[in-house]
Length: 102
Image (cartoon, rainbow, N blue to C red; front, side, top):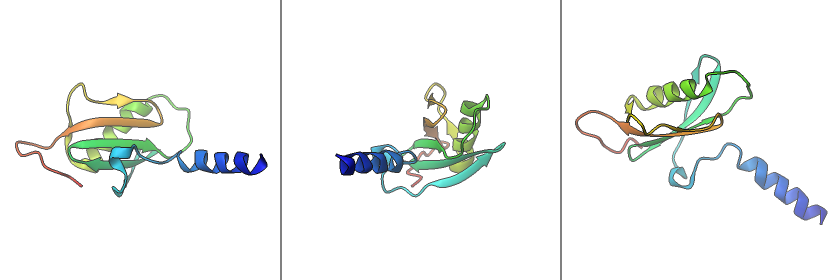
């Protein structure tokens, strides 16, 4: 029983800073915005930002939005940004010729 508990804790901790399945294998871009640190994953016109520091400040979603745009160099498609203080996702628009930003 103890071994199962230890394995469960290890798996839970390993998942804390992991992207969604669609971003597996994509190298993250590390971005800091006003003291908040994010790992931003970009692939096929989509982005996912995971906050990697511990904080309770207001405005984390706005900083996550900024982190995605800085990391990608693209604009976020209006209405596509969603998430919570730990993980944010968005669709990207990179000009007239959208392409894979991997």
